[in-house]
Image 1: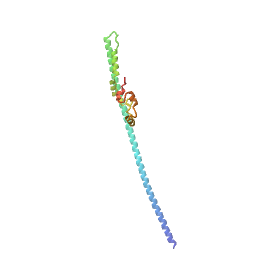
Image 2: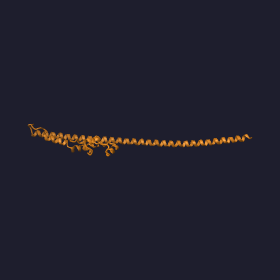
Image 3: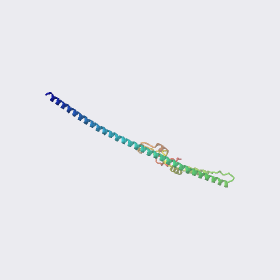
Image 4: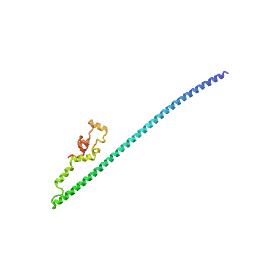
Length: 191
């Protein structure tokens, strides 16, 4: 009977070791499970954040695209209006020239006077080359909103800061017209 108590003691020790191992293993499994769940939540949150950012970027791009389309349409309408106005003015000029031709024919049947005298041509040249009229046309057509006439429209913030600090110059503007003129003034060709 001496063998049985050793056997029972051995069985108790093995059972205790197995129980402790199972408890430790289950604790590690629980910790791993919690860590995996936390990682899964973090990944899900990150995925949601990325989706939101992608959606915001897409919405911003769509707004910018719509704004560009709107500007193009406004410019197209402005050009059409300017073309209609030009057409009306051309017709009025033709009508005035026809009336002048008729008047000259009535008063001068011998044909020794030219249809357009030097004074009439000089007046028309002065009107066409008038800076004030050119400025008005530039304003009506909205040329100051076009990057071809105002280099500062699409200029980056860095370039603006460098210009303010005197480290960069608007070469085209400085060479062509001077830096302090309005865009409408730069549209007018200097004599």
